[in-house]
Each structure stands twice: as C-alpha cells, then as structure tokens.
Image (cartoon, rainbow, N blue to C red; front, side):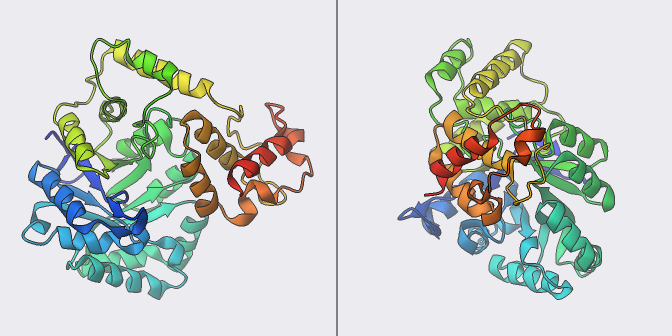
Length: 378
C-alpha cells in the first residue's frame, strides 16, 4: 500500500480508502447488506493496509454505519481512521446536530469519530447550517472528544466551494473528481484551491459511480487497446486521480472481493505524477470519445437559470447525457427520482421559452426536457 500525507495532520493515509456506500447486498435491496461478505471485504482491505473507512448516515438506507461498526470489532477500530457524515438535510434546529451525532456514535458503536463531515453541502444546506450555528456545534463536539477533525463533502458550483473552504478552519474536504468531471462542482480548480489552503482532499466518485469501470463502448475500448501498457478501465480511472499530488485519499465503493483486490493492487503501485505524457494523452482521447456520445450539447453555463418554474435544466441534461454516454439509464433514472426535487425535474417545465431566449448554445431546451422526462419520468 502506498501512503500519502493527510493535509496538516501527522497522519499517513492509505492511497485507497474504503467507501461503504456500495457494499454487497441481498435480493438487490440496498437496505439488506450481505453482512458476512461486507465485513470480510472491509477487514481484508484493512489487513492489506487500508486505514481510512468512509460511511454516512444515509448509506444503504441507514444500515451502512451499523455494518461498519460491526466490521470494526475485534481490534479493527484501532487500525483505521473512521469517517462519517452529518446528514445536514435533517438538521432543522441546533439541537438536531447533537441528536444526530449521538445517534451515529451509537450506530457505529464507537466513542468517537476521527473525521466528521458536513455531508453534501450546497448553497441551500450551507446557508441553513450557518444560520443554525454549525461552528458552535463542531467546537463543542471537538472539545468533548466525540469527533477529532472537522470536514465537509460538497455538491455544488466552484464559487460556493471556495466560500465554504474560507469560512471555517476545516481539516479536510471531500469532492467528486474523475477524468470526466474536471470542470463540474469543485473540479480541478477546487482540488488545487483546497490543497493550497492546506486541506487534505478526499476524492469520491473516482470511477464516476462505476460508469468508467463497466465495459466501455467499442470506440472507447479501441483507444484503450492502443496502449502498450494494459490496465482495466477502472485502473486507468484510479491512476488518473492518483496522479494528482493534491489528492490525499481516493474512496472506492467496492461491491465485490474482486474489486477490492484489483483496487488494492492498483493502490500499491500508483504514485503522484507517475503517468507519462502518452498515457495522459490517451486518457484525454478517451474523455473526448465519451463526450462525443453526448446527446445534448449543454455546457452547464447556467444562463438558463433560474428557471421560473424551478427546473434545474443543466442537471436534467447531465443525467440524460450520462445515460447515453455510459449506457446506464437505470442509474440516471434513479438519480432523477431520488436527487431532484419534483419541481426541479424536466416534468415541471411549463414551456414558457425563457430559457431558450438566453441559451448561448441556442438549444431547443423545451424539446430536450420532454426527452428527459420521457426517458426517466415513467
């Protein structure tokens, strides 16, 4: 296992962290974790040098933290740093902070959490927890020993990211980052900004929710086949992220022992700045090929926002494009229904046309939104 410095701390973190959001399940039910197999996988990874375990309140319908608590019995808790996340969407009063943290400690069956994150911050949730006094809560939780280090995970645009970074003395942050997602959310600019501020940077979705690991389209596979060095698509994706010296640890949500073993092999050899110019060029070609499969040429510039009806037009188009690029309509349909509020979905469009009047790409947005809803709304 290769280790990296974790921001300002005197702690060497394993390059690979175990993300406990995609554990093996029974009957295709995310709430029914295959307990024996999941515990075996987590402990095997720890035995091979993984020392960062990441979970969250909502993962596996609330069962992930309980499973992780069981996996860290028998001396394994002392071998790792444990990260979990405050479900900020459930925080309506200041008292909710303490209530939820104490509930998580009980579920994890531990006396403290090493790395505690405000989960999935965006403009709305960030404004809410600021209003409710999250700083006072974190300082109290740090003082009484329930948490060791504060951080946040993020899902919004770059200006919101820098605002959050600068607003509080965080130890670390967690961002989505992969070779397809360099210009969305925090992106490359956010990675470099946080690292320059001294924060450890934890990477989630390095394989874009598994999309970059599945059998690629023939045109993409043909590009991979050009390389004299052979890697699986997942390994290429992970190596690209690990190539960045600003990255502290890369989380992978592993569902099978084969995935654990492959990622461990990759983590043992990947180094910062280790990819050659030819390899980086190849990955850019793959990225361009994926992008060529895009159905809607939306650049997510935001000129169409805010929509008078509340439709989040760029997010709807991203889900639609992802479904075609990665041939995964199920994942995009799930995200459409789970992560977009009803008034934010394509179905809420009233066809007023205001968006088309200001779109720099001159897209037929109303027709595209109908296609989105036809694909995901049923």
